[in-house]
Image (cartoon, rainbow, N blue to C red; front, top):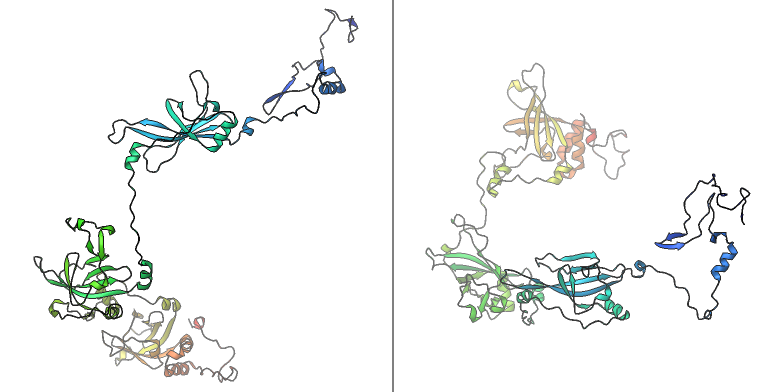
Length: 569
């Protein structure tokens, strides 16, 4: 009889007592889960818990039980090693069976087709036995294509069973959601895998053709053997070489027919022809740029095309027997191009040399035509006389174009000489005694050769000072209106007289910047102009190249060297 050691009583019913110190009442777990699989483990014993019988064994006894082998076993050398478990999603990762097939789609109320054959590709994923059905994209088919059935386990029947790779084979029907797919063939990987699993595949089939697509297929084109003539060499050697003929278009067959002058261009690079009409000023005709656009003109076409009207017939290169060549254009003879008759009466000098070098058998015979039929225009543009409104440049733009444009300016000069002004002091040369003592500042702008005059205010003179002349170009006296000559910086010398619109001004002084700038461009300025400025400003001439600055008389080291910053304000 066992004895309850904790209380000293026999282990009999009624002699057992509950442990009041126990606080954990859960059952010990003997299984644990790792990577989704249940594994046995030794449960831990908490405070106040009684371990299982297996837990009361010692560690060495447990190891002995694990390594214990049965009495009747095979030889240890012939025992197979234990295989490591590999999950399906690792073993069959990216391994897919691919079957090709088609399904037939009925077409209702269509006169062109009764049914369609739509090819599909069936994918079977071995890792989770899922399947998907896709249709290859066809350009401009007008049918929504792509993935028809998304990836999922496809039901096999109403019992809840799903398709397995063992149920798939060639030359069989696969019913998915009411659509019957015919599996015709598969790829090499699928064939090798099925045979490795002991399944024998049926003979592959071919996908039938779609009747509508077969009817729409265009017949194969018949190509003509290319010519041995090297077109590339002709283009490289004859590019930008054009034969020019002067001709008369005989349009006398029309209601108000007449002979109209035209110019025919024959491009040697590709044997194309262009016809341009010579427009006569004030002829009353619309100035169309060309009479016939540049193209190759057929000379002879097949007989089958002749009964058709030429105005609507588009002649293909296969129907043309011969095109016009330089041999067909002979000066002095008539030629018929696109149903119109032209008389070639002359050509230019390049065309004459070309025929003399390449076609000496063709004689150039210019024909004298009625001079009244040719335009009486010498090619020179006559500019009407200046009417006095606006500047001369602005008025000239009205004669050059229908919509006048601003005169072009010298942008480089504007940028280089921007804000550069030569200022002179001047007095008014007048016999009126009231004009005595009036002082003016004449400003010459280097960027555009314009001159402005400002009158200084003199107290108790009775004359208001201010702007006397706004910026404008002043012509010299004696210059014509059609070809005016304007004042320049070389004309402004101390003591010189400047006539500005019947007002005479005498230059009396200038600032130091004027002298420095004119000395920088001394090759463009007369010597007497520089001399008058040096005498007025009290500056001696610059030393010669063989003299040093210290030897130059009248100069000091602290004297400024010139520039716009030295100009007095």
